[in-house]
Image (tube, rainbow, N blue to C red):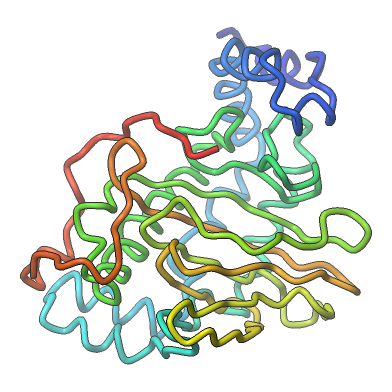
Length: 303
């Protein structure tokens, strides 16, 4: 692609919002036919936004989590330092401080600049075309292909999410080689909730990207325990994360005031295979948890 990829991407005729949300075949063709163009456009955009590249580094993570994870990668027997940071707040649902609230503004600024880049980017289907809503993984059509973001995203999945998920949910090992992710910004009077559902994942990580000074009302996440019939609505502070099996029923409640920004990240096996909780699974050595799978991305996208 020549040096005009950025201007070409910005001027291209785009599918309508209605066509996107209806998943019209022409929309799929639009993303497939222009994939190389948009990838080149993101590279060119980033080359002109050099000050953004350094914003996505390890300082975004909570200091305690970052230190514990680094220790575990050097010596997996120290993973107990990581586990001590995660609290079970509902049966099978764990919470921890994931990002440093003082550094969240850098990540949010990056995502806001992405929204202002005027390069076509596919929103999550079923979520309105709102500011900050994007597909994050290379397997997704119309994904956020900026190189520095992709490096940050892959490091998050490989160095943080997968080993932590294996530690909390050992049954997912082997059903966690594939990655998937999206960003969402909930806004009043648009798509304000997501009805009760399970995820097509072995494990889900949901991170609150709201800044400490950004207040919002409502928009908690309600969880359902099939065994006890218990229901609990959880809210989580800026930079904190909830992690659970994808099979745990949950729903996002309506937001009534302000906005809520999130990253939603999945792990699952090749061809969409997912772990089945409470099914007997192989016990793996702690060293195996702190490794990166050799399996290549299979191109399968859940949606």
